[in-house]
Image (cartoon, rainbow, N blue to C red; front, side, top):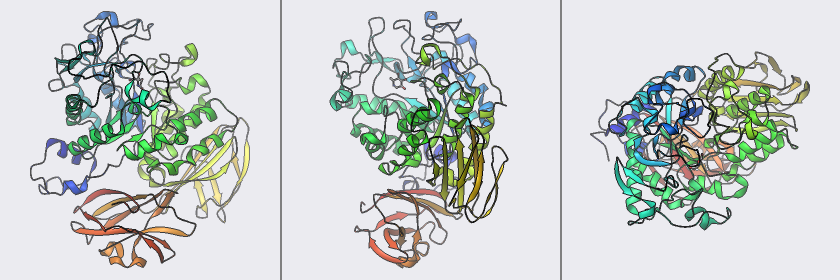
Length: 626
Ligand code: NOJ
């Protein structure tokens, strides 16, 4: 199937992410985009819109001035941040190395207080097809089809190479405010009301009391929020059509709220439909307190069609670096040791604080410790997400910094803070060194206070060494897998010398981090396929190759197949460059080999693919599964 008349969305998709010849009208989009897009080189920054910058103070009082607090003393009220404020700071963010902005929900909210709290956070939606007027210019129409503020944000962000991630909520609308609950509008037209639910848009179950009870999690209420009944096709059509409208404005990715509270089938259908609309969509979900140990969250990440926020790693980083807990870096390594449970651990969203937990700085005001945490998530596996203000050491410690004190107003915009500077360098590293964005992660040295790990992909390497203690440490680092040479830390300029693969007497000052990057040869070609296979376990000395009916895959000669890279016990990855076969149909399979000896091939009918004539495609396959 070819699209001779591309939809604006498909054109936008091409413009945003894929280096294709867009002048060409006839193109096999279907085959190019049936799998998810690459987001792993991004550096995400999470903004609570109301608390970032008041770019236009005329909109502050809103329809109900009682919800706004000019003095900024009432933490539950609006404080004035808006879309213009974000636009005004895009250059600041760009120079810090931010490449994707996760912005808190922009949907129109109920205009009432619940115990002195207004929905400044954006999670009490009234109309999914309208924007919160408090975030717009005064008098600007807030229907998504008419207002222009978001378009301006998207346009300027894209012109600076910054993607926009919209925070969406499918699980619920609003709680009881002023005697109304769950009143929902479709671009201004009332379509559902929790207290007069004639068309069964909502569940009417009690509050969740047992957080281990699967049924309660899916169908009961959370914090009194009107919970949608996803079995109702009218609801599903409404929410999908609303989110598609946002995507058509040019939103690049979605952060999806409370995904644990809706059934897996809903997410599979929802994302399936959205990705048909926007094949290059990347999405990640908030599976509350996900942890690889629970078994359930990795399954969700593997089966839903979206990645998830890595709460397991976040908890370990907080324990290790903010609280200096017993176990130190071993707590972090324990999380990485379970990466094989995910089909795509390198796409997990890594963070160490957010709007629902005390900021790192409230747990530990030591800015050096925060700096180490930032460097860690910028270099370890996964896609890093920085909570707004981290670079300015922003925190308010009232009540231990718990919500709402974790959402202070952004106060400073210094571009010379150590974290701002580190971010700008490390974000570039993520862009240019695929060992950091795509590669495997190998522990090289660990104790409670010191952690050295290597990121590895093809001939690219990145060695990271962290000392969190308050004392100078000297260690012997062996088997670095770096070629013998002198290497310079990209953050400090200090050098190390690798001799016979080892670094003797590596000097690690108190609370220090070193990042040594070694660049290799980029894969080039007309069409590049990023290949990932899961679900095959290999023994030492064994590897996975892709064999197929074209020269690039050895024409079924197993000794000439394309050898993939080991990422973790569940993942092999590679980038295959196609020149001769670009634009042609090919067939392929995976095989497990030892040296050049075939051990076993997949026992399935061959996989088929039509290669684009140019650009980047992605195969995400599971062993023995068509
Ligand atoms: C999780 C969000 O992160 C949180 O801030 C919000 O209040 C709840 N979901 C409910 O939407």
